[in-house]
Image (tube, helix red, strand yellow):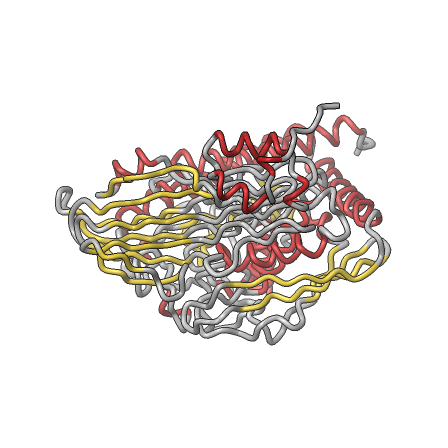
Length: 570
C-alpha cells in the first residue's frame, strides 16, 4: 500500500461523509411520514466491523444519535458473536428499537446492514428513523404517564427484517399488527432500507477506487487525529472541577422536579463527567438509558467544539462515569419515552452550564431544550382513515459572548425542523390558527436569548386524542454569567371554549378532542448571556420596535435601557 498522503486522506474523509449524507437524503426523499420526509428526524452512519466504533455520520442527521447508533451497533456485534442473534449474510438488514440495547425511546427504530468485501464484513451501515407510532397506550408513543416500557409500545430486539435482500413477511406482519396506521409504515421501512442500499453502493465505489486497505488506513488516521484535536481543545481548559445542575419539570407521574447534578473534572487533556447525586430512577417516562446519556454528553461537546472531526476518536478523551442508581441509567422495565427528546437536552444543558464557567467565549446560555413532542391520533371521516400526527417544534437558543441567541432554532439534540404547516394541514384534519415567534420569551442579558415559537392547532373534523411530552414548563432555560432565564414552555388545551392547563405543565396524555377544540403551545426562549444592564440600549430599542418586547417588558428586563444613551460606535 502506498503512503497515505494528506490529499488522499482528505478526499477519503470527504467521501465517507458524502456516503452518509447521501443515505440521509435518500431516506428523507423516500419516506412517507412527514416527521422523516419533512422534519428529517433520522440519521445515517458508518461503523467499524469489529467494535461498532463510529467512522462517519451524515451532517444532516440528529446529533443525539451519534453515540446511540455506535452503542447499538456494538451491542449487535456482541450479540451475534455470543449467539444471541443469527449471524449475518449478504443482503441482511437487522431491525432493533430496544432502548436497553443501546437505544433511545421506542419510536426511534434502527436498521443495521453489514457491508461485505471478499467474503468478510468490512463495516456496518446503520440508520435511525423516528416512526410516528410504535403501538402502546397512546397514539404516537409519547405516553406522558407510562410506568413500564410495555405501555409505550412494541419493543424489538435485534432481528433480521430483511433476509438476503428480501423483506421477511412474518416479522413485518408482527410489527404491522402492533402499530397504528400500519399501511403507511411500509413506506418508511422501505425508505430506511433503501438508504442503506444507497450507502453500500457509494461506499463500495469508494473502496474500488482507493482499495480496502487504503480506506481502512485513512479511517484509523482520521480517528487518531480526531482524538488528538479533542485533547488539544481540552488542554486549553484550566484544571479543576466545574459543577452545574439542571432540572426536568417532572416525570409525568409524580409532580416534582428531577435533578441532574453534574461535576466535570478537567485534568491535563481529559474530561471526566460525573452525575453522582442526580435523582433516582423515576416512576414515569423521563428515565434515560445509558446510551442516550452518553450520547447527550457527546453532542454537548460537539456544540462546544464543532471543529473537531466527528468520529469515535473525538470521544476518547471523554470519560463518563456510569450514573448507577439514578434516572440517567435506566434498566428494564423503566419507561423511557422522554429520554431522547427531553432528558438528553437537560443533560446537555448541565454540560453547558458547567463548562461556560471554564470556556465563556465558547459556550452559550441554555437553549430551549425541548423537542416540543405533540402527538395527535384519531380518525378522519372525510378520508375514511385513521392517522397519527407527530409535531416537533423549535425554540430559542441561548445568547453567547458574541451575539444574541437564534430564534425558533431546532432542538439541542438535532437538526429536525417543524414540518411545514401546509404539509401538515394537507395530511391531517387540522388547521393552524396561529404560528409565529413567541415575543418576550428570550431571556434578558447583555446578549439576549432567542425567541421561542407560539402556535395554535384546531381539530377540524372527527375525534382525536392528544398527548404531550415536553419540558421546561416549570423552569426556563438557564441564563449564564448574570443573564436571565428564558421563558418557560406553555401548553393550553381549549375544549368547548374552556382552557385546560396540564397538571404537569408540559406533560399529559390521552386528552380527548372534538371538532373546534384547540391546542395552544408556546415553546421556551433561550437563556440570556451576561448582565442585562450591559445590553446596548440601541439593541433594546430595536427589539421593542420589532415587537419582540413591549416597552414595559424592556424596562423591567433591561433595567431602564430605553432611557440610557445609545453607545457610540467605535
